[in-house]
Length: 151
Image (cartoon, rainbow, N blue to C red; front, top):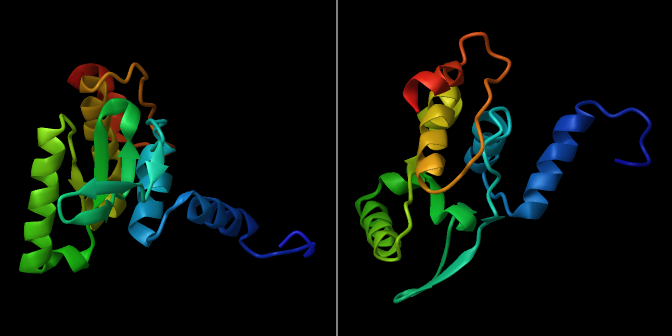
């Protein structure tokens, strides 16, 4: 990319590669960062795809906010199967037993209602010790403008 003077969608490709390097492994995870977290200036995950040692072996989490004792799970259709949902429920119980919260987001929360999701995640992060303030994104209808009313 550096050798090419002109490259269509250079910024998008550069951002995608940077997120891949940080551990992003899906469109949904990238969307969480680019549609929910960054435009609303929520705290960036401290790590992505961080391994957690559990009773049944090593597990990988989607977006860990270790400083807030939170991990955001981003569930695609692969989590619709009964066994996958049961495994998710086990992980959620393990997180709660460790004092961590684990909100689960799906495509709708990330791609259809990212501003509402950002408003809710800001409240979750605030309850966990985040002292920042979310900001509205470029959308004129961004629900984060309600932050003072809902916090």
